[in-house]
Length: 568
Image (cartoon, rainbow, N blue to C red; front, side, top):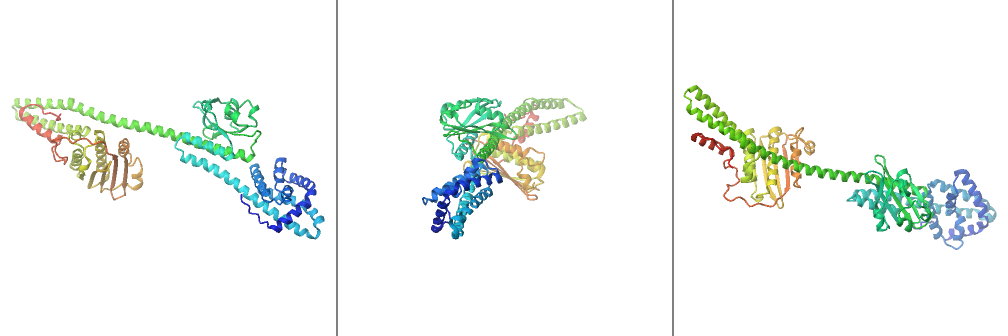
């Protein structure tokens, strides 16, 4: 602390005169002062010794040599010590008042007519002293706050649990001027402590484990209370060779949270023996340990959540892949078994129709053939939605346009599609994912939006593919759109998010009541695949599987053989 004393040269000269005059009376003054302090506050000898350092009694040796700055440095040091002892500043001020009251009778005899001047000098000294006391108390409180904020900052900025542990130990050691330190955490079974972070330790210590209940550190973990080692040379509880050789005194506190109990132990070491903590130092170290324990607990929870999220994301991607494989499997089963069976039924009915002469029977057979034809068409539609052949053969643009056309036909919603040529062909998995997003989005529009027009726009922006689907429907409100599970009981939007997240993409939904909904999907562009030669433009005007089915059904009916269900 810089000198802010209001003492001028004349005041200093007076203080020197007073100090020299009282010098032979200081033993008597001090005895009376100690007795009254003990009566009023019950201060122990250690506290009284620190308070005495603030008085003119201690200052006399400095003042007689004209050295005021060293005295006030001494005042600052012992004021910080008093702060660590937990002594209130009002008690410090009262202590200075009592000391001055015991000086006054001597001033009457010594200075006589100059007593007022001498008393004014003592008042100025007391005021200047208390300025330094207040500054030291402020600095001490500020240091405590800074240490706790450093732990909080470490919690917010540390990228991993290991970084957090190292930073928490560094802050604790720097706060108290420790030369060594160790932070140990319990294992998963809670039976042993393992060294997780260290300062000034040998490499061999990093494999050190200590059973809970054994030694100095294990004892703290078992009891959950702070402990001291005042001289490591004679304390057999110290297990670490580095701690024994490099530290003379050790302070240890448990890392405790209300929910998890004792997580571990924080140890800091000092080079001088019998370095005992003061009450406020113990409380501050305990506070740092508690703050660190909460940060460690949250960091562990965060890492566990990250691991769980990674597992869930991997599982979700696996389920989506399995879902696509199952869809392909079901479509093959429908094609190979059910579809071919329907073709055989149609063939036999056609053959039977030619042999039946009764008009009524022929009419029934013809009606049955029409039912079979409609069933085949519907089956083809189901197969196309399960595993769209047009997506595989003609690409994403054709598949999206076909889906839009079918949505318009089925719901009456006019769906417009714009597909930039710059998109090109993407990897099959990514094209499938985008197609499924379009499918689900159009399904939601048809089911919930009450829209008249919907638009689909797909473009490539540098290394990203952007899909935008918008409608002019009723919307669902900003708050509902922002929710991951927006859409009531439907998991459609959640499925969209999972599909897009599997490719490292993002989903954004903008919706306002009465003003429609806008879904934006951005995914990294996959490595392009060469377009198929000889295929039609992805304009969606070429005949799809359904159109081909009708043509083949008609052709097959004329020739008396079952039509193929799909163009393999």
